[in-house]
Image (cartoon, rainbow, N blue to C red; front, top):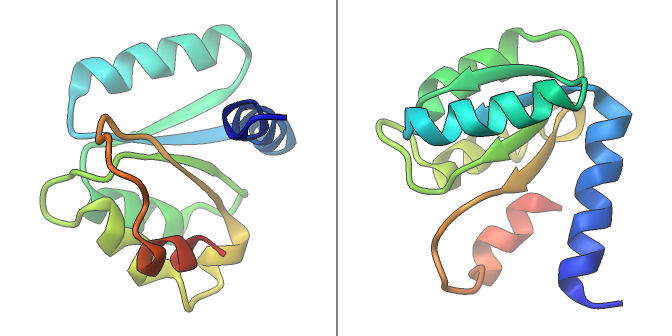
Length: 115
């Protein structure tokens, strides 16, 4: 099984398991497009335009969320958000999927934040 297929299966499983998704992207058009697609599929969707608002949502939301996280964000970027939650219960309460247009591979330092 290729990595892309494996990642897709994992993402689908996580979203089915939670039922609630937080879309974190500074581009309003992308957030809305993802929101509409997920809501059409029956999921509850929350939105955050930056890492600061996303972090507040993660801290205050009592249900487990799947977080679709862009890496390039204002105020607190995706790496900063992952660093902020990495040593807290938020790292285990919620599940994180990185969504980015960046073509580079994930640096090992940041990959460790995801485990």
